Image (cartoon, rainbow, N blue to C red):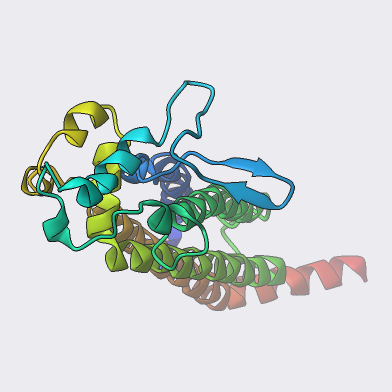
Length: 256
């Protein structure tokens, strides 16, 4: 216990750094999948996705739509072997199970959630510092309660993030070939990709589950460390029981 007590600040600061890593990493969460997208327009509650939909940068869905249409036009680029429909709209619309739109919305929501809940976790860490859990030699009930409840709250936040991350990873795994094709046809080299054979596109696939797996590991590490911090608070409260009792006894005597 002496080792834990002597390194209290290090343990708590490491906790804060770990939570900060989650937030910073969250800024890059969607980077690998940024081009798995369709451009869309919104009117009221209605979402419209068409071949000619454009954005402020004059980007369109033209190339991805036309590549799929090649199947119906004699398949000059050897795309039909993939077995996809010639109507890309069936993969773009939000009503389809494998929709690109559904994935990009889900990915964006999870990305925002990582940042927001990461900030909530950082507030929990800040409250631990307010309670002086990192520097107080003797723990009192406030240190015990805060030292357990705040890390437990962080655990709940990380479990929510992990569940959402695994959910979007499941969507990717179910449609990884479609999404890789779309990523190439919507990416910076979309013109070249639109004139590449299906086999040629396969050789350029770059979207994997790496990011999702990395974040799952990160969330597990934060959960494990949070458990350690909660246990640490209990052990330190218990270890300083005699000193705490002596101080409280003196305080009562002085008041008398």
